[in-house]
Length: 339
Image 1 (tube, one colour):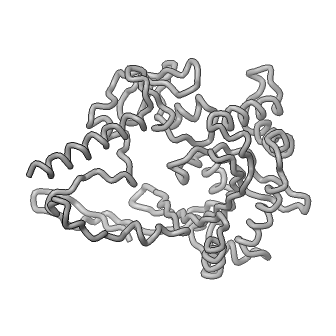
Image 2 (cartoon, one colour; image 1 turned 90 degrees about the vertical axis):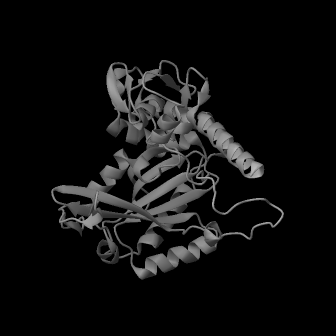
Image 3 (cartoon, one colour; image 1 turned 90 degrees about the horizontal axis):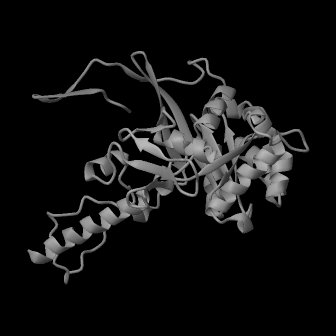
């Protein structure tokens, strides 16, 4: 539930802005519309990893069609199956999770990067990328993109050792959630993500929620304090390594600022100028950080902190923020010891 509020000198009050849950069906959006949105914005789901989308509506030998196929930074093939809602899933002759397992089994038959290019990726390149700008054929461009991606993570020798399944829908039925939970408990790499549209006045948002697998319960436990440690409960560090600082925080810390020159690791002619915490200027074009990184690498999503190098320091933003976190933690611990 979302509650709209106003914050003013009188504190917090409810306001009259109407926030309501809606459905993709009410918004006149079809499954193919959601699929295309995800194809173009896969980083909205996978915010903490790099993915290269290599296929859409790929047909297997039994005429089954998988929605999206990607390669992750571990060399795994990722099958992404999308349904508008649980009603769409239940109307199909085959349960969503069973359909996905069947498609994933087909992906397990792909043994080499060249085989992925020949069977799937070159057709995706031919459909979505303009190869007329270069002398490369669709097959050649697909091989170059895939090899660059695999070499960037040093995973050419680890290609497709495992397959992942991602199910995406605005709602799931209980049978699907039960089956996926059982598969997870038996070490199948499968997950469920909820995409739910929300309307407020004339604006529409999408709420993204990872449903399965859940966070480990241990992540929420509070341990017993060692009596030998001189730690005061009233003064705790505000740094949490499981939730790393975002770009806005890096600006507040002075790690990165307007006018800084940055580039993408291992990429020539990628230097951009920082505009603010959201935008850079690259070749006279204003772009979001992620859009710039994706354009340089040719990937569908990118962990911009791991790949952006601040030229002045010759370190990635991730390295610089980790150093800052360590510094803050050390200062915090020193303060506690001194008290």
